[in-house]
Length: 194
Image (cartoon, rainbow, N blue to C red; front, side, top):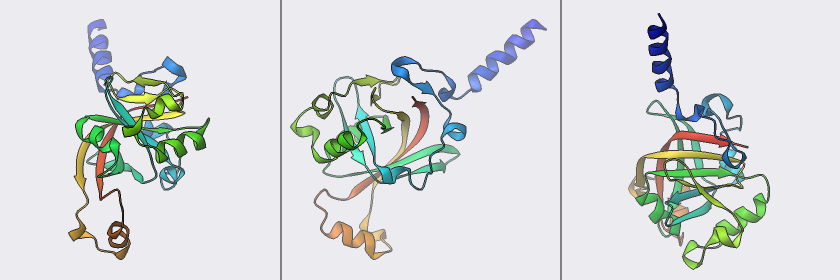
């Protein structure tokens, strides 16, 4: 009987999502997005967030205001968009994982700076006195964030203007200096909140 109970417990632990593991480092606690994410998905990206990708050798982050959250391919997913000429795009294209971060403290200062300056010109995290940490998957995030979603990229493709069905994207990209956006869809594999 003890062996059966042990086998069942081992099987249940193997089925538990990665987000169930508690992480107390830097004051974060693991959350399960399906039950613990309480923000309005229609408004979450309107408040601007940070997107980060890279590894322990090189990484970059940028402010994002476009995105979506929901379910795709039976996975809890986040969709983000990065324009062709953004420095962060090379990191997104080369990394398997990315993070999306929300901030409480110094939010306006951090998001303004990260959205105005390019990582090509210097270390934006250092300029803001942000401290980079890395998940078990090696994904960068800032310990000053209030919430971190770690996502595994499942799909990435640039928008194709041939398929724009409305004048809004046609007009936007007719004179958009950063180039057309690439859509990245990531499965949320970990989530932490302070």
